[in-house]
Image 1 (cartoon, rainbow, N blue to C red):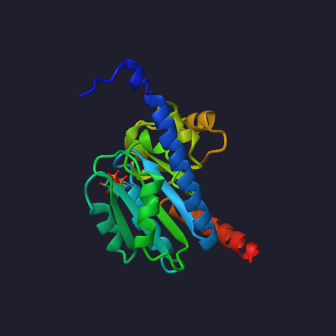
Image 2: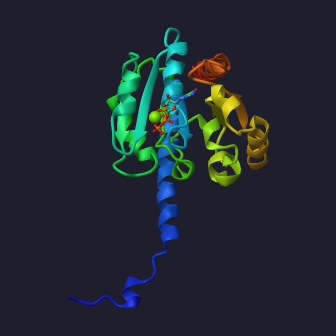
Image 3: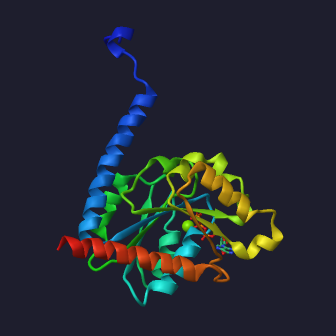
Length: 236
Ligand SMILES: Nc1nc2c(ncn2[C@@H]2O[C@H](COP(=O)(O)OP(=O)(O)OP(=O)(O)O)[C@@H](O)[C@H]2O)c(=O)[nH]1
Ligand SMILES: [Mg+2]
């Protein structure tokens, strides 16, 4: 076997490979964004640490909106179908993307999943990302709105500790607000830190369990759907 010399091998910088992979991801993300714009579908990418309440939020959002619009969900998880099963119990189509150990969803995964769901007449496509505040930050999924959940039980220091996530986030949701009386968490501090990282971030404080703040969140989604429809109508 011919031995590869240093000259033949050259140098492959992991950093360069990552950059190329991200460029490929962004290219596919733009294709998804264009497709969803033409169809008038609002795409929401939900990210957070594991267990911050993404699926619970989706279940309560479905209860709030399903009588007035058509919803669909893509669920990203390392291994199980559990979250998709929770969503299907509410009569909403949900497709599980099992990443097999990859800690984030990529635009290519979304592109492969889209033909497997019925997008006809869908107003909002929710994507629940794999639970963590690191890897999903770098991967545009072609979404309109990136939403990052921070539950009050995980501490108010997250925006400064995971700045890439909050820098790319449109909406921060402070979740599990019903537990605020029992944990050392300052809503003012988390908002101040998030704004220092990203001055344009908007915050909602809510509890999926008790319903506090859900009306404002659902109203925000209605407005976004309306904006998306207006953009489609203007094109026609
Ligand atoms: N007290 C309280 N508990 C909540 C609330 N929302 C979710 N939980 C609980 O938090 C736990 C995790 O909720 P999930 O909705 O599964 O969280 P997730 O972010 O989807 O979790 P992963 O998909 O594993 O990342 C569950 O035990 C929920 O019952 C809330 O508003 N208040
Ligand atoms: Mg979940």
